Image 1 (spheres, rainbow, N blue to C red):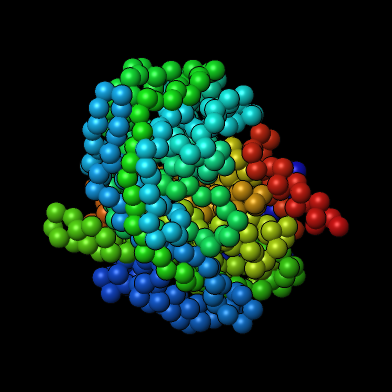
Image 2 (cartoon, rainbow, N blue to C red; image 1 turned 90 degrees about the vertical axis):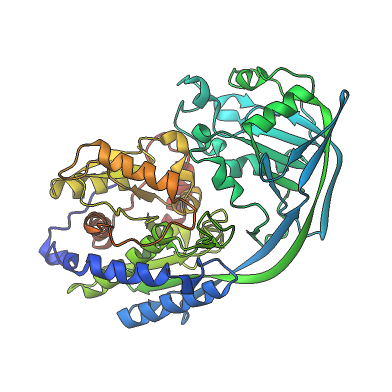
Amino acid sequence: MALAFVSCNNPGRTGNDEDGLTVFNADSLVKHIKILSSDTFQGRKPFTEGEAKTIAYLQEQFQSIGVQPGNGDSYLQDVPMIDILSRPDPVMQVQTSKGAMQLKGFDEYVLSTPKTDAVVSLHNVPVVFAGYGVVAPEYHWNDYEGLDVKGKIVMVLVNDPGFNNGDTSLFKGKTMTYYGRWTYKFEEAARQGALGCLVIHSTAAASYPFSVVQNSWNTSELRLDNKDEKLLDAQGWISMDAAKKLITAGGQDTGIIAKADIPGFKAVPLNETVSTSIKTRVTYSKSHNVIARITGSKYPDEYILYTAHWDHLGIGKPDAKGDSIYNGALDNASGTAGLLEFARAWKSLKTPPERTIVFLAVTAEEQGLLGSAYYAQHPVYPVAKTVGVLNVDEVNNYGKTKDIMVVGQGQSDMEDLLKEEAEKRGRYISYDATPEAGHYFRSDHFSFAKAGIPALAQGFGIDVVGRDKDYGKKKQEEFNAQHYHGPSDEYNTSWDLSGAVDDLQLLFMVGKRLAYGHAWPGWKAGSEFRAEREKSAAERMQ
């Protein structure tokens, strides 16, 4: 389904092309970021006082801006979830034909349970190395072929087979598909009937260090309260060194790890069993998505969504300075502040949008995109009538850039709209330099993509004005290495949000291109999400 591009330069439709752009400003962004990421908001974890303060603040801001409640007469959508605090044993006992050994929790593995039993016990459970744990018919790949994993733990590699050996004919080569995500590994292991799943960590393949994984040790995790969902008893990560210890203790050579990259790989049962247990504390409650809207003047039943996740990690393990509040200033108080800027800009327009504009601040992104997944499964506005999604997960905090990055190259027509708007302003679009990290599957736009809605994922540019091209890349690497999902992700007066303003203005203009026309963007040929969109198109024609 092709997109008929709509110009925003037609004064009979949209008025002044620059209308609304001057509303965006760095001072306004800073004000919201400083409040949302302050210690008072306690890291904005769902189910905490931090959530209550966050959703109250967002409702107050939407009301003051003058945008309508987005869920009937309410700004809130209830998201039923379960909060599970997993307390795993400090060690995992390993029994082999040659004797016994232990793996140390936190240092060598991280384990939790999605189940609500008071105690989950693993007793002498066999371990199987199942390669990448992937079943992908379109790539002629099945790591579970001929394998019965019922009552067993599968140990699998993160990322895709094409990543480690660089073979571009395997999956998408270095570019991660959804099969490479740890969330998929757990889902597939559960579908196969496994008792547990351990994902083997490597910094390169996961795109973040093991310390990021360790942050979830002995902390609570959320999941949607889906009654019929298949769940593992235990799931988590294991360091590469510890995985090799298990492989050799089980009488195998660590060379089987490399063999997992070769088509036709067969899973390898290890001659060993493991035992450990996990105690839980379970809370059933509801978190909340926050929704506001501006009703379209001509096509009020067609919707354009701007999204950002309001949540972060709350209070957790203290860092070296004793700071235990994971403030999440960049991730994602900054994107939430951007959402409020979008609302102000749209509300300021002299000519109201013809389509309805929805502002959706979702919960529990950090727990697995739960708020956006719930919305996609229980949409307030019909999926078939949703034109597209523009998601902001972090903003550029190191200055103006000549480029704006698209995450997920070649996915949808939304990319072409962004390219045209960027070129009007003397900028250009670039693409994710590390597609192997799977960024397209790591933020809320992915929940909408799975439902078939074209979703634009905008990232930071790296071609910083007045700097060499490595500067932007170095700034991103610095954040990922030193601050990502750590207590040090706090607002700093050294931030330069002028580039963030430019990027938000571009996303605003993409929305204007859609809001004053009747075109429907689609997925490009070869996108795995195209079939769902075509179903929606058929529904609209009925």
